[in-house]
Length: 342
Image (tube, rainbow, N blue to C red; front, side, top):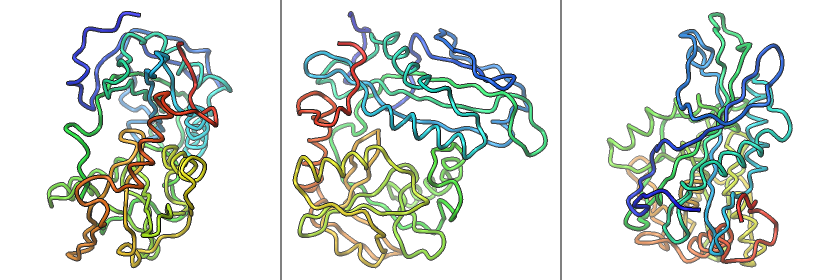
């Protein structure tokens, strides 16, 4: 298939309107079958549930061109399961079984010309979301909903190469115990905006949020999970009921154990042990792993010796292996990549 005439190397991480998107509507107690449309605009009441009470959940995943020319997506079944759990927590009706994966397939096929070629460092980012669209003035769930999935080509998250991040321990709380930290709800990200702008204004790249109850345990940033490497090479990730279960982080832990033979551990990580780690990274769909060089705890600098100028050696192996699986360069032992075209 002929690709769009785009300078793929100049793409940033932003929105570009593509040809088709999937739309389905929930009304009178059921979802319609949905379908593709060229219309990127949404018309709704000024009193729509999403506008009044932030009743919306979303996901993020990517389509890639592999080394052998196939177009694939990575573990979409987990995105499907997570948006299901997120929807139920916000009293949004779950999608019919199979609709999510079908929408992913339809949108990728319809926008195949927008999937960047192998080796470009770019990918086709997919954004599925569900929101309350009917008018709501009292505090209650909407009666009607819309599910949409659009695609946009994006460049590599790090323009000009990976540079380790400097982050601060935040005084803000990201999620309360028994709250919504474990789901991908728009409201979680809205409340993090002031904290991230504050961090940027202070010269930091990101925030490290601690648990709201005691402020003693590491949780996550506004949009990524943490991954640590001990000085003897063990891969450790924080365990908490109030962090989002990152698909990338879960995949990296399996890669560490099954591909690289490393010891892995998911447990509570305490603020006081940060200086004992050799490497630190942020895990997410956008960049896979973003290395962290330094954490600043109210003036106290905690440096990770293996990640001050570039990715640490273990972090680099994890990154190379996972992206190798996604791009078809390394054997996909667990069937994580789903071929859409090929």
